[in-house]
Image (tube, rainbow, N blue to C red; front, side):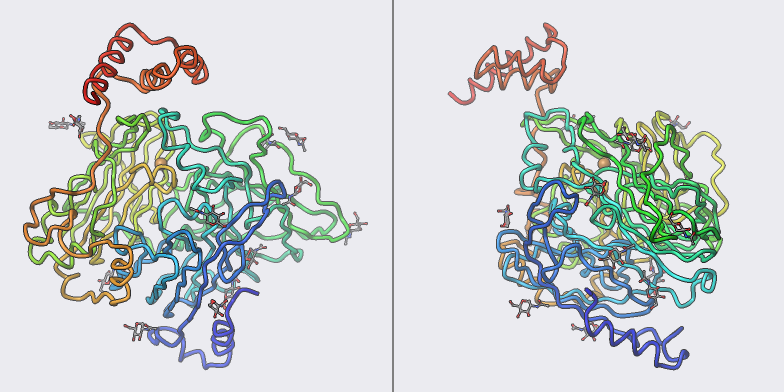
Length: 605
Ligand SMILES: *[C@@H]1O[C@H](CO)[C@@H](O)[C@H](O)[C@H]1NC(C)=O
Ligand SMILES: *[C@@H]1O[C@H](CO)[C@@H](O)[C@H](O)[C@H]1NC(C)=O
Ligand SMILES: *[C@@H]1O[C@H](CO)[C@@H](O)[C@H](O)[C@H]1NC(C)=O
Ligand SMILES: *[C@@H]1O[C@H](CO)[C@@H](O)[C@H](O)[C@H]1NC(C)=O
Ligand SMILES: *[C@@H]1O[C@H](CO)[C@@H](O)[C@H](O)[C@H]1NC(C)=O
Ligand SMILES: *[C@@H]1O[C@H](CO)[C@@H](O)[C@H](O)[C@H]1NC(C)=O
Ligand SMILES: *[C@@H]1O[C@H](CO)[C@@H](O)[C@H](O)[C@H]1NC(C)=O
Ligand SMILES: *[C@@H]1O[C@H](CO)[C@@H](O)[C@H](O)[C@H]1NC(C)=O
Ligand SMILES: *[C@@H]1O[C@H](CO)[C@@H](O)[C@H](O)[C@H]1NC(C)=O
Ligand SMILES: *[C@@H]1O[C@H](CO)[C@@H](O)[C@H](O)[C@H]1NC(C)=O
Ligand SMILES: *[C@@H]1O[C@H](CO)[C@@H](O)[C@H](O)[C@H]1NC(C)=O
Ligand SMILES: *[C@@H]1O[C@H](CO)[C@@H](O)[C@H](O)[C@H]1NC(C)=O
Ligand SMILES: [Cu+2]
C-alpha cells in the first residue's frame, strides 16, 4: 500500500479523536508528511510495450492520496532521476498565502535539479477530486502524476453513499517525452500535429474491476491525467448523478455519459441494481477528433467492470454509434454562488497556431507565444519593489497581466484553432460564465447574453473548435497564477499566460524558503530582477527570452518544408510535399520560398 505510515496513523487518530477536535475551525490538527524519492522504473501498463516511467518511491502508478480538508501537507521531494529536473504541482489547490508552493517552473519556482530536494509545505482547505503532477517542461506524460482527493467532513452528500471509488483516465505513449517532443516541435511537423497516443488507460492500467453490492450507492471520483486527448466515460445501463466537478460540490445532475478533457475531474453517485446475475462494463473512449490521423491499430477505448457476480462473465462493452454527452455548462454549484458582476478588468486572449521561422508550429495568445522568462515571475514580483505593479517588467513574451486585490477579472478567450483546448487557471475556481458552440468565432460582448444566475465553477474549462468562452473570478488570492492549455504539447509551444494578483501584498506577506533559491543557484538561474534578470533598470528587458523569429511574410509551412528538403534534394522535397498530403506550391509560394533561400544564403555567405 502506498499511503505512508504517518498518513495511516493520522487516519487512525481521526477515528480515535473526538469529532469536535478535528472538524470545523481546528484546521491544523493533521499534518500529512511525505518523503518522496522520484526515480525511473520500467512498466508496461497497456501490455503492449515496456518503457521507462517516473516512479514515486519506486512505485508506479503514483499512490492515490486521500487528505482530509483542513490539513497541512509537507512533501519532501527528492530528485533521484539522475538526468532530469523535476517539480510538483497539486492541481486545483488555491495555495492561498503559499504561492511559492504551487509548482510551475519558471512561474513560481526553479526546477529541482537531479540530486537536490525541495519541500512543499501548505494547507488544504477545499474539498474535491484532484491530481498532482510534475510541472517541469513536458514531464508529467512520462508518468509523473497521481490522483488525490480531499475528503470533506462537511460534505452535503455525506450519508448518501456507502463507499468511494477513485481512479484516473489517461492517454498513454510508448515513447518518452524526450523522444516525442523534438518530433513535435520540428520543421518536419510544420502543421503542429500532436503525437498520437498508443493506448487509453484507466487507473494507469486496463480491465480494472470494482466489486459492488446490489442496491448500494457509490461515490465515483474520476480524474483525467491525460497529456493530450479528452475521453468520453460511461457505465453501461447505469445512470450517474454528478455531485462534484473539479473541487466544487454541485446540485445533483443526471448523466448517461460525461466528458473529461485533460486535467478535468468529475464526482458522481451511482446506485447499483438489485439484480446480481451479470456484470457491467464501464468505458473510457478517447475523443478521436483530437487526432490528425487515426492509426488502424489504435484502440481508443479502455474498459473496466462493475462486478456484481464473480462467476459471471465480464463481457466486452457494446460499441456505441453516437456520443450523448452531458453538458458541464448546465451544472450549478451547490452553494448557489451568484454570477460575479461589476467586472473590473477584462482580458481578451485571442488564440492562434502558427509556424515560426524554424519551421515548427507554435501556439499564441494575442500574437505572443509564452516563453519562460530568465527569472521566475514570482521572484520578479518579490525583487522589484513598487515596479511590481507594472506589466512591462515581466517581459514581452510571457502574456503577463497584473490585477489589484479584489478586482473582478474576466477572461474572454477566442480560439481561432480547429482543435479543443482545456484551459486551467491556477489558484482559483473560476465561474464558467459562457461557452460558445464550435465555430462561433469571437465572443461578441455587444450581443445580449443570458449568463447563468449561478454559473458552474471549476478549474479547467474546454473551448470548442473555433469557439470562445468567458470566465470570471475575484483576484482575492495574492499570487502569480499560471493560466494555460492543459494539453502538454500546447503548453510547451507557448499556450500560456500569467495572472498576477496583488503583487505588493505578496511582497509584504510571502517568505520564500532559502532552499528554493538554492535550487536556482545550483542551476545558474537568476532569482532577482525583471524578466531579463536586470536588477538595476527594471524597464530594460535586454536579454529577455524571446519567441522564435517569424517566417518572412507570404511564406507558408508547406513552402518551408519544400525548401528545407529541396535544398538537400529536389526529389525528396517533392516526396515530402506529397507525404504531407499538400497540393503543389503556388507560384507565389515558390517565389517567396526562392527569395527566402536567396536571402538566407546571402546572410550565411
Ligand atoms: C485488457 O483486456 C484486453 C482484452 O482481453 C487485452 O487485449 C488487454 O491486453 C488487457 N490489458 C491489459 C493491460 O492487460
Ligand atoms: C529515498 O532515498 C534515500 C537515499 O537513497 C533513502 O535513504 C530513503 O530510504 C529513500 N526513501 C524512500 C521512502 O524510499
Ligand atoms: C486506482 O489506483 C489507486 C492507486 O494505486 C488505488 O488506490 C485505487 O484503489 C485504484 N482504484 C480502483 C478503482 O481500482
Ligand atoms: C534518463 O534516464 C532514463 C532511465 O534510464 C531514460 O529512459 C531516459 O531516456 C533518460 N532521459 C534523458 C533525458 O536522458
Ligand atoms: C511548514 O510551514 C509551517 C507554517 O509556516 C511551519 O510552522 C512549519 O515549520 C513548516 N514545516 C516544515 C517541515 O517546513
Ligand atoms: C478517503 O478517506 C475518507 C475518510 O477518511 C473515506 O471516507 C473515503 O472513502 C476515502 N476515499 C477513498 C477513495 O479512498
Ligand atoms: C452469478 O453468475 C453465475 C454464472 O453466470 C450464475 O450461475 C449465478 O446464478 C449468478 N449468481 C447470482 C447470485 O445471480
Ligand atoms: C467494436 O468495434 C471494434 C472495431 O471498431 C471491433 O473490433 C469490436 O469487435 C467491436 N466490439 C463489439 C462488442 O462488437
Ligand atoms: C471504441 O468505442 C466506441 C464507442 O463505443 C466504438 O464506436 C468503437 O468501435 C470502439 N473501437 C474499438 C477499436 O473497439
Ligand atoms: C505579431 O508579432 C510579430 C513579431 O513579433 C509582428 O511582426 C507582427 O506584426 C505581429 N502581428 C500582429 C497582427 O500584431
Ligand atoms: C461593440 O461595440 C463597440 C462600440 O459600438 C464597437 O467598437 C465594437 O467593435 C463592437 N464589438 C464587436 C465585437 O462587434
Ligand atoms: C484567500 O484568502 C483570503 C484571506 O483569507 C480570502 O479573502 C480569499 O477569499 C482567499 N481566496 C482564495 C481563492 O482562496
Ligand atoms: Cu491546447
